[in-house]
Every structure is written in structure tokens, then in C-alpha cells.
Length: 280
DNA sequence: GGACCATGTCTAC
DNA sequence: TAGACCTGGTCCC
Image 1 (cartoon, helix red, strand yellow):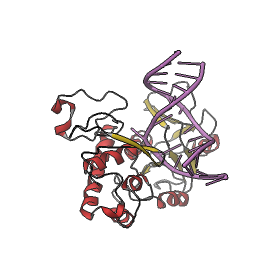
Image 2: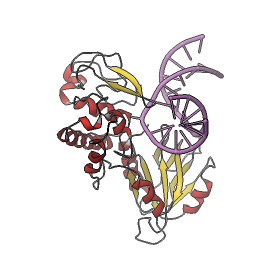
Image 3: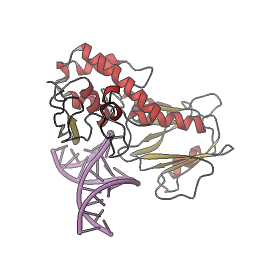
Image 4: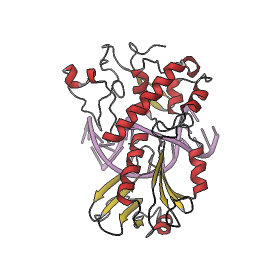
């Protein structure tokens, strides 16, 4: 289940396996048959990630990145996943929307299941999608001033603003909860009520945390002094699991102050925070 | 086997 | 704000 770090990691992994090489594309499930047929056999250019959106370029001419050709636009949504493998692709199991496989050795494949979006776009259409997104902390071209301009004059809560992809692209429910905890900010505080210094620290922290997320392919947010080893506490067992402070820890004691972590629904998602550490 | 949950987003009312 | 959509894991019977 993906936040921006998953998508950037996928872009790198897919580019490493398929970039600059002819690719076989198919849709075993059938729901992307037309799009797959259009790129099948062509050379993949590069992969691009912007927030939670993934783009795979199929240029028409040598040396282009895809703008003169087509892009496969993928959004994993809540459930989508890519399974990457080396070697020959196995017989399809389950609902595979898109299968990519190398046309030449060394063999590699990638199976896409359950995406929210899998469609073919022109370069102009891709630009329209990314143009609607706020700055992405994982992108070198990101301008945090654009986010600050929205946040600093908004009465909306920071919890909601951080999840709004038009404000900041790539942050999801885990990073939003964790970064607000790490900066002692109550999630219900309004955007206009944080200082510029606080925002700059939050942005820099997001960039660092998400970059670590790309590197390890999971979300870890606890500082060295709060790791299970440092504190002599049992590691988190529950799921896909990195070590976190508040996300899905409702009712458990805060690693820092010991108060019970709280949860409440906010805009159809579960919010988590520590009432002891995070101040209005 | 079924209910429920999930790191997401869009659309209709 | 509710419902829809896409899939898989977990927990309970």
C-alpha cells in the first residue's frame, strides 16, 4: 500500500529493469488490453514519479523520453501493487491488469494488480495530471513555497492539508501522522497557525523521511533514541512494518511521553496523534 | 467462508 | 458526506 516513497521506488526499479529496452506488454486480465497492445514491443524510455502517480514512457523516436509518444499512467490507489521478478514470468495468477516483461535477456517481469488507474496518456495529458499536483518532497524540482502559500492562508487543519495532493504530493496517512508527531504539532491546528520555521522544518523532515522510505521500501519514522533496541521494547509486529510513533497505535503508550495515542476519523481516514506531545 | 480493514481518490447527492 | 472502485490480509466462525 503506497505513499509517494513506494511510487518513486517503483519508478527506479522499473526503469532499472526495463528502461532503454524493448518490452512486452500485456493485460492478462483484459482490462488494459488496448493500451498494452499499443506499447507492446516498443522500447521503454524512462519512468517518472510525481507524488503517488507513476508514468512509464514509450517514446516514438530514439532518444525521447516519451513526450513524443505515450506514457502509461498508473495510480495504485489504496490496494494496487506491482510484483517485480527476475527470470521468465510465471503463468498469470489472479487479476493482472498489466504485465511487463523484457523482450530480450536478461529476463525480468512486472505484474500490476488492483490499480485505481492504468491508462495511456500523451505527454500533454501527463503534464495536465502533474500540473494539478502540489510540490513533491521527493522531487528535485519541488518548490515548497507553493505549499507554504496555500498552507499559510488556510483555515483548514494541517491534517487535511498534508493529505491534499494539490498542496503536497506524495504524503499519505502514515507520513502525515508521523511528521506532525515529530514536530509536536496538533493535527487539528489550522494551516495559517503554523510558523514559517515550523513549515520549513516539516518540509525538510518529510523529504528526509520519504527518501529513507524509498531506500528501504518501507516507512520508518522513529528517531534513533526511540528504536526498540534503544528503548528495550518489543519491535512493531503488526504489518508491513517500519517503526512509527503514532500510526495505528491507538490506545498504546506514546514512545516519548507514555500517554495513550488517540485516533479519530478525519475526512474518511483515521487520524492518529499523541495528546501529550502534540500541542495546539 | 465471511466480515472487516487498509499507506487512495473520484463522483454523486 | 456517502458510496463506489480495485485487491489482499487478518481475524472470527
